[in-house]
Image (cartoon, rainbow, N blue to C red; front, side, top):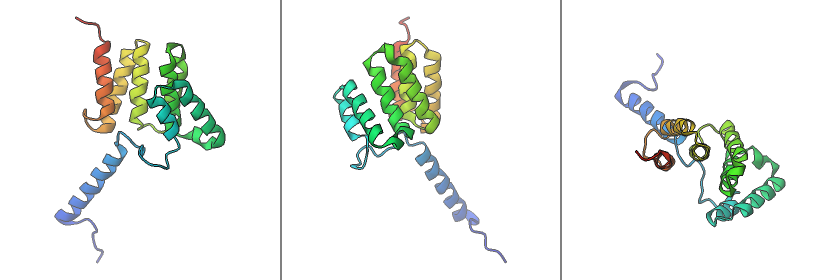
Length: 162
């Protein structure tokens, strides 16, 4: 007689817990260990934090020359998009392209979605920013994650006063 692995109350509970944990991991709004010493992007993030947009781009370019595979990561394109967006509106097409590349690699990258929404606001495409906001909400499973809150505030601020 075969044993049922997930039978009864505790079996169903175990399945629910496993499903919930997998959703939580998939919906983690910060999928990268930003505090890790093994993070290849520490120097670029430091430059971004210091508002050194050109320095961040140079660091990312240098990193990609030393480690070409890094160009195939969503975080590389997310940071490139962020730096180009900060340099000025003339670079928005390049910035948006990098965010799209990040999302092709990792569709659940909520920070890239937030920043893409911010870029859309800069070209007055509130509809596209709102689409990113909805996607972030579905990935975070709530409206309480930082990327959702940040983009929502930006959308609200972008609307004309009535």
